[in-house]
Amino acid sequence: MLELKRLLSGETESIPFTASLDMAGMSSDIVSGTCAVSGVCRGTPDHIVLSADLKCELTAVCARCCKQFETSLVHSFEFPVAEKLESDEDEDRFVLMQDNALDIEQICSEQLILNLPLRFLCRTGCKGLCPVCGADLNSGACSCGGKRIDPRLEKLKEYFNNK
Ligand SMILES: [Zn+2]
Ligand SMILES: [Zn+2]
Image (tube, rainbow, N blue to C red; front, side, top):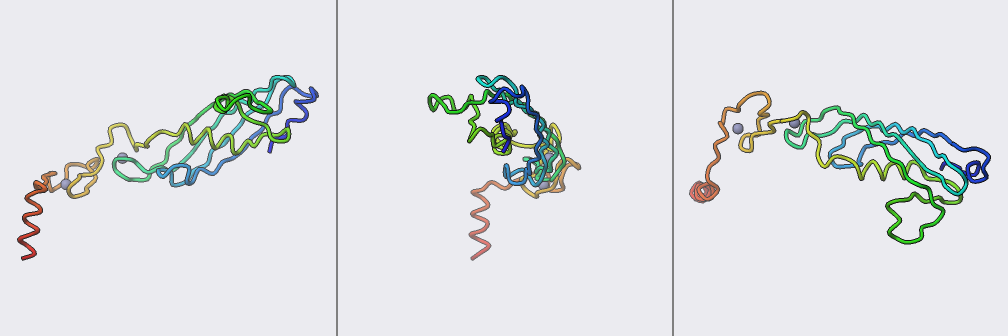
């Protein structure tokens, strides 16, 4: 927890902080990773703003070829800090203090998860895997040529093979 008492009493106008977040499990595509957070809470007792820069180094799974690869991403955010919310709608626009302190790790984790890419690709234009034989098409055309038997014929073939 980041204590804000010195800001709330006007004793200081800025409290810098750093944190490190474990990214494993933040999405099903993330194998492992670390997010380095550096930020600051600043302002006057009646108006405090939290801003943070997030720098992540992670191992992700490519959505197309399923290979693990290293990648990095950055995200920045800034929110006013409130003691309590006037209405539920404010929840997305403020961060809340608890006992004059902020749960920096939880706030940053939430913001990071909300802003993760929907999918990770190992490279732009990754060709993915052949849907028939499973070969990695980035390393050339596969031997099966990608010819798929009509699913209805497949059923028929199965039927006769089992006879
Ligand atoms: Zn890929
Ligand atoms: Zn193939």
